[in-house]
Image (cartoon, rainbow over all chains, first blue to last red; front, side, top):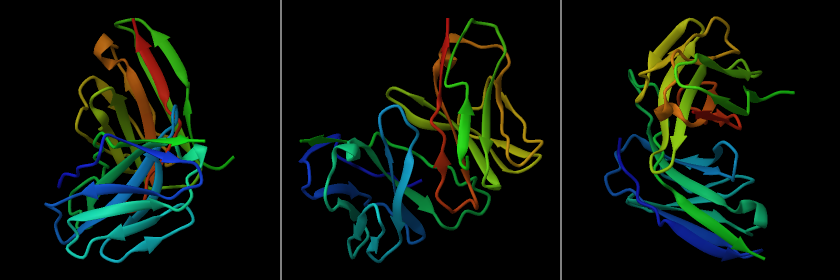
Length: 114
Length: 112
């Protein structure tokens, strides 16, 4: 599976936007970009995913570079509840015999200051 | 309540004992997964299941056994627990293999 690179940690102020970057220079044409987050003492939680176009949902926005070698998860107004580890994961849409499991890296630990 | 639940939340046991971690989902999702999370390794897949009575190994299956007699349940058994299996275990499910996975809150297992 293609690898992703994320900063180890980031800080944000409450109620300000947060841009979490992810580099995936070896992404293939069939790889979707998925984002999950994990709050302290909880299981990972799906945030958003996309292929080529930018995506929005109630939790966040996903901006994908034109060459797809990088993407950015955008939290429009960070709250204290957004403090978590955010994982950027590539998933091949052409699964074939794959089990479709998620391969988690170390993610970005986001701290939100009041 | 709808969702995915794991039990127990915490478990302490001794080396050599058998222990079973339970996972139950109410969405009738076809796919279910077991991961373990250790410091420095992130989450790693132990076993997965594509449907009732269909299971397959993931990245780190040694020492674990799973079954899936009913769609909603996917228990994970450590037949003879070892200290290296001390970890946090997460169960997840998804409707299709390419759909987002929904995770339980995890079981923190300590083996003394």
